[in-house]
Length: 91
Image 1 (cartoon, rainbow, N blue to C red):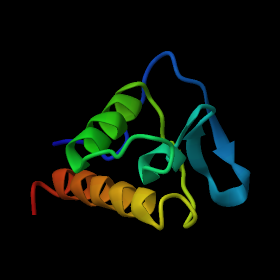
Image 2: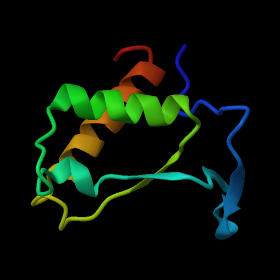
Image 3: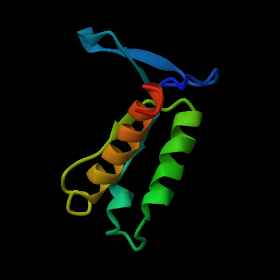
């Protein structure tokens, strides 16, 4: 079974406020995925970037609607849906 969040031994985590949510002190910004900075990312490239971040212990993702006309949010959403499906056994 694949866990939604995999923790790296070298990453530092902190609790986010009163939520009890454990998040990495290093996050992944997604503004570059919007394609406004000279490179358009494919879905496969976005998945590879998120997988590398996840493998490094990153659990905090920063995105905003202004990044590439919602493209970065759509790509992040696709990756999150894939992780959830994997965690649920591929359903």
